[in-house]
Each structure stands twice: as structure tokens, then as C-alpha cells.
Length: 338
Image (cartoon, rainbow, N blue to C red; front, side, top):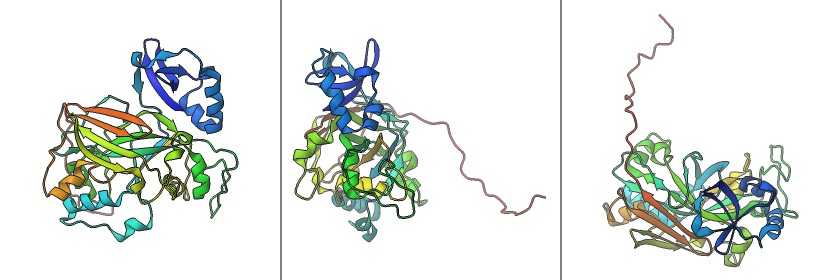
């Protein structure tokens, strides 16, 4: 099944993509409600409307397939880390800590872009894309394993301290994710031991739809990794290609880690992190010792294709200059008011 949100003459629709048409959910359901109900309930809803006429896909404008509850972005591809570190540190290096756990950061759920939507980047000299696959969290399925309390009140419906087995049942489906990045802003911020903040939070593209986990199950390899091919092109030129199964951890382990002493809920988006072998320009800049290929420019079109999911297009718009902000002012560090 494919779940989508779209805009048409009568307003915003939410439902299934069936062949070459979109069909609204029954009873006015939304993507958020279907995610919360879980994959089994989604199959029931699909059975009720799959034969409906719907609207031709060509006559609607696809939107981001969900309004995320949160967006976590991981860094799980060793090859990507090697390439980017060469540009930042002057040599290829993967920190020992990378191997210990699937590190992630939270990004902005309020600047989500849909298929074909134009990103409006900040003023930057190093605009980049990041080719990723994102897992979408849904409600629990029956018989999905156990969770452990470990100091946090937990139940099967909580999404707290999930085991990898239980986490697997929470993966409702997958979509393509483009984590737009202003590398110069990101680099400055991360020297303060924080970030990437404004280097990232201006735009994240998701789409074209959510493909349910059962549809992609045939692509799981013997170790539980999703072995789908991912490619990215800029202005029709192939820049990078990789298998998503080159991740250091499979998706259920990302969900389980996110739930440690915390909570995952339906509508959470968990990005795989940038694939290797040219999944972003930053990796290639590190390997090539300079800005080759050139950074993205206004008017460039970035097209990401992932086997079994589809295609996500995005266009670079004009840079948007934010109001100026003064630098920090020296303060006397007095401890009492005069």
C-alpha cells in the first residue's frame, strides 16, 4: 500500500495511491489516524476503498505524505562518515564512538517539503542535499514482542524502551528523505559543540508517499537490512548510488535506540542518514579535496530514486537573507546588581 496527501481543486486529500489514482481514506480518516491505528487497520481501510474511482494521480499535487510528530536524522553509513570527515578533518576518519550506537539529531518538523516543492535556502556558499530513506513509526501490531522497563514506566503501547523485535512492528512504512544542508553554516555551528541547527532546519523533503513495510519486506536481506538501491541525480547527472543495506544498523535498531529512556509515537520520522558513495556533495568534496562537484545553485533540480518506493524531486530556490543578528557582546561577569 501507498499512503499519500495531496492537493486538488476541492482542497487537501488524504488516502491511498492505487495504481495511477488517489483514493481518499474511508470515513474521513487522515494519515495521522491511519498511522496510529497500525498496519493491520490500514489494510482493513484499504479493502473498503481500493475499488473506488478516485482521482487520477496526474490531476493532483502531492504533498509531504505526513505531518511528522518529530524528525530524527541518524548517521548510519560508515562510507559517508569517512568522506565527510576527510573534508572537515583533512583525513578520512570514523570516531570509535560512531560504532557504539546509532547517533542522531532532531531536526525541524515545521519546515517539511513535499515532492517537487522548492526549497528556500539561507544565504550559503555550500548548499548540499542528503539522500536518505526514512522509516515512519505507526501504532503497534499484535504479537510484536516485548519491551523492557529499565527505570521508565513502559507498556506495549507506550513506545518506550522497545526491543529491536518490538520496534520492528512499529515501522509502518518508508519514504524518501532529502535533508537539505548548508554546509558552511553547519560547520560554524558545530565548532561550538552543538548543531547542526541553522545549517539544516530550513528544509527537509519527504515523499512521494509512504510505502508500507510489508510491501518492502521482500527486500530485507538475511540480516534484516533493507537492500534497496538508492540513486541521486542533479540536473539529470548521476551523482551518487548505494544500497541502503550498507547501513551500520537495520531500521528496527534505530527505532529501538530512539525509544531508549524516551518515547517514539506514530508519525515519528527516522532518517537513515546519508547513504554512501556520493549520497551527498559533502562526502565527495572530502574525497576530492575541493568543491567538486560544485555546490547546489538556485534552479538546480535534485532527483532521488529509491527502489520499491519511488522518486522524490526538489528544486533549489533563491537564497533568502534573514534579518541581521548582532554578535555576542562582552559582558563584565559581575555576580550582583550594582
